Length: 270
Length: 270
Image (spheres, each protein chain N blue to C red):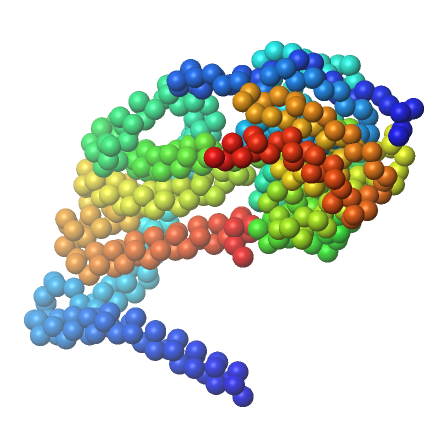
């Protein structure tokens, strides 16, 4: 009896939480729709109903899915580059002070240069295909991976390494069986942050590359799609669709990483 | 009592250790002029005020530190570095947080020299046997953070013994436990060590503790150290019959040892 009332109470409080969390967004969308209905029928201003229509249209032609997958593919490849170099270098720098002292000045002088600041150079060097976007993504993802790996490796409990030595574990195995697993939480945190900035960077890079390659350009990706809507077809509804897709993908990426952290590190969660 | 079987296991000759602070170059003499001979199968406890270099001596025997002068030999061979024949149990256990009980107990067997000469089934068998020895059967899949302090301590003990070391080096292994658990684990430690076995079948143990009554209860001999710089003040034989009875805890020899270090202990905290 008491359990059912308690369950009912928590159920109703959950619904009330959902209600309060969605109330303001729903009201805003309704107000937006109401406002747009006062405009002339041929107005280019975006409205919720037109955004939905544009979305259905873009999905039906396959253009949106293709552009999103292309951007995601670039992010993944660029991220993997950054992962290999960033984690490898980070492990070296975190475990060896001499190496860190040698490389720190270079890294610290590049770090403040925003990925977007490298775009002009990247486009001139690599042209308007996939290469400049990959370069920008890898560059953007590199720093969070590197810095978090250095921090995680240098903070590994020294006692664990000493314990390994007293168990007759050879040095290479101490690295792979003790230092890297102990540093894994920090490395994964770096990977999650890196993936976030990589996704931000790809949109900007594709926008800029799209601007260079023009309307008929084959650079592709969701960023280029946005650029075409912005500069050629002037389709505000399409731009809003792209913005929403970018946001949803970013959210999904973050959730996937959090889920992976859960699965890979069961010892960190009760 | 067992004079017949006496055989020197460890020999420390005129051992001194000086630490130099890397930044300031400030020198500290941690221990000086330590001479100690430990017999095979002997249980030796080391007591003394804080900062008397107890852990420094243990680390040098483990091969994790090298003496500034003097020599340390095991079975007549100078110690050159860490090795699985000298197992260490650290004060805070140094369990691998990402490994469950089973993998922690088997860590040395799976990754280090102690696993040599065993096939996978024999390794499993040995892990199972040691998990059972410390009474943790059924908890194999638990991670260290899911265990109580006493259980973690048992995991560390099982790991230590599963590696099959010749000499057990224990740095205040019971220090972090509450008083009752501590008393229980002292008895258990003696049982597992093989108190009822003939001396030649027992392991050689060096056990560091703050607690004099613990030292008297466990040891064949108690090494009393003094500080500034750390040196051996006296070696007190505990000629009490084994298995030890609870009454041993109140033996007058504890009072006598306390008398030796009381002044320095007070000065150390003043």
